Image (spheres, rainbow, N blue to C red):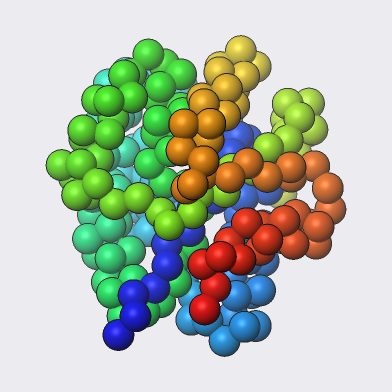
Length: 208
């Protein structure tokens, strides 16, 4: 049996990841590809429990080191219980965030990239997506989109200031520059249809 593919969508607040996860899954399904969508932190029962700890409460609830450990633990369960089993039976997995978010967000708080990847190597056996698509949008537009979400909720990370989010965006750019075969930057400032077309173009070489 041919293994499935693993695609992750990354980006800052308000970049449209959740919307594009759904749209990309629909585009792939229209081609006859079996797809499951998931998210991080979360995606499995254990990881969803950890998500509640990570995303709620005061910005200062956890130190950056504690956050990195919690994300690694959630991801390990997610990979073991959902992602690897799906890939192994030939299903494509599209994930809203994965380890590159930890590298960007906790990296922006001073956690060494090598340390994050070492945790990932232990907890998730170093699994990386076949393709990571980083959605990029201007900070003002991203903030406006985040503020306009229907639920009005701002998690612990969305509540941080503009300087922090600028560092996160820079970290994503650095990852893309260092790993161009896996990571592709996508201009997400256009309409949803155009962005989906751009995503599909960047995974065209993976399509059966």
